[in-house]
Length: 451
Length: 89
Image (cartoon, rainbow over all chains, first blue to last red; front, side, top):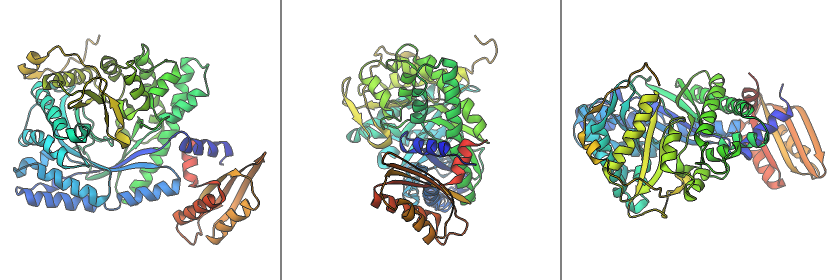
């Protein structure tokens, strides 16, 4: 039986605390679109995406209305395009333009999968695709790109790190007139998950079914509000409160995922147990850490509180969903989180602290604005550092840096919408060029003798 | 299948009549109502049966939305599954 308190609690969560489904992402395999003629391949890609996802947006909107839960994004992820373009030769940007056209036709917010997996080396098509990323992200608005350069099983491809350092910089330069938005759509991964519904890193792994629905939930505001009601609780109780809230949030994601999959006639993939912030006031992961007891995010204690939060979110969420996957955990994208933006502006949150935080939470150095004069080698070294954390800890880490071309400390970039805005953060200018230019492969780490 | 309508706002004459009027027009049967008025704030939770609706559920939700706007009340219409899944194991 329903009771009034439960009903009002749900409505308060949605109305006042920004609870929402962050994304319904349809994963579509393009393996059957491979063709030696690039134009035929592009046509097949367009036809398949627009066929599979034709009702995605409408079904999302119907569910939103029926259940009264906002579903912020409807998105598509596809097989890494490097695999498709390898057979066709020709300019991979044609595929980017095809994805853009298909995304517009379906009405989705983003389409991810302009990707390559090069953790152990480049196969045919990989290098061409990576080199085309700056162009592809400059001529499209909806396409997102990711490159996996390392994994726990293979180690880190340092040649790919070096290349990605250059690509990230070029991508920013190509879109310098639009606040360098290109790099906000480009992620470099270590241990990339194949069923991630979140952009910019979503792609549809080759081990996945032909078509699938994945759901990402959100709700930092709800967690913070629940903690605010327990100002004197000890830290064990704090963990329990977070688990309970994460359970409720995830149940909503599970319901929406199952319902969307039923209506679309597509198998249900996973719920990503996530706390995804937005720039809206109150929808911030940093504010949760501050609610736990930090004066400002970035202070000493941030890593410990974040570790607790991330773990409790997973523990609460895992029981609420039949299938869990994706990135699962608390996200810390700087420009997308009002509390992080504040902390970065006032100098409390540094790049070094962020790096430490990524060792205990989902994803990694996400949406970090760095000075425009950063060298490609320094970007590559930041990628290598982050990938090393992921590789050694058997977790996903990612880097989404935005070199702010022509700007420096004290300046800000403004992307608008969910991507938010943020100040340029300090970097270390001592050169890692010799290390990066050595190239080769950092060997996979030992899995025993863990210390 | 059932849905939950919640109405919150400043108390005026005929809120309940108007909300149940919209339900009746759409063939939604009212099963249960709890209502309270604290000072001049009105709060009502109404459980309705939506098996025999003569329109789409989203159309009923739209009608109640616009009723809410015209009366200056906040009206939410949500399928009961959302509450069951969030608050029951």
